[in-house]
Image 1 (cartoon, one colour):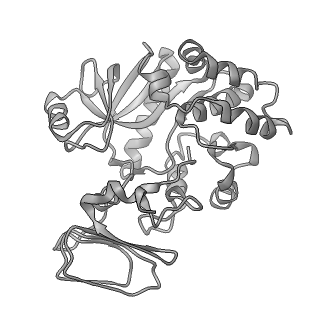
Image 2 (cartoon, rainbow, N blue to C red; image 1 turned 135 degrees about the vertical axis):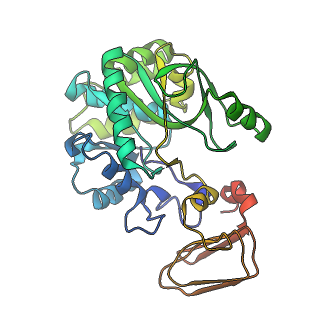
Image 3 (cartoon, rainbow, N blue to C red; image 1 turned 30 degrees about the vertical axis):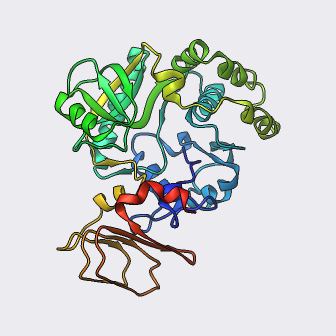
Length: 337
């Protein structure tokens, strides 16, 4: 899923070129390329599909030249994750029958790719044999208020049924979740067989299911994009959590730990980067930090930057735009653009 605009990562991420297509970590690969790469050895390239905005088609083609045009699904507008996943599920089923699917955001980070592949392989086997929906739950390492949570019925390590999905909590509630031990971060990664989730869509969101069922004759034809452009904007704007997960009796959570971050904010990037002895992190070869503490800096490689006397700040420069603000204000960045 590569259609978001990454508004909280401005100015590095813009609506014209959002963060999933950017080398956020300074490693020579975009987040999308890293996402596709970590599925290697688990899912063959011919079975990798990218759902994105029509505006980003050329970027996807440039960054992932190994996939064919039919493997890129183009949304004419943003309608949240339920229509996105429904489109992909119905289309793939039209060609591959009751395929077993993994849905993953294109803009997340995974540090331990070996463990990630093991978890995905086990999740696929569980979904295949149990006719269930599996969502990955990250074992929390801190009382995080920026993530939604999943409460498991029981167990800490085994795949078990979901008791409830929880919205992003305040700090006190997040601390209670950590102390409880049966709550996990909602990573937004889902595994299911096509027919399993289509049955759920028919039961929980019949209008959405009916719309995509009516498109079966157009998938893989020259008329598909025209019909999608007409019908997709009519879908309700709703997440897959609200549409299916919170209502379904087939939802299971797989507790996992593989160095995951949704990389939704500058603060989340800061936690992943190497830091100097004053707690500063920089993605730049030409930055000189003097008397600074706890700052994160991301600037163009060709530009020399000198920063003095700043504490707990974000300094980000991209495409002739400069952002300087307190890390504590990062949630407001999307309102300043």
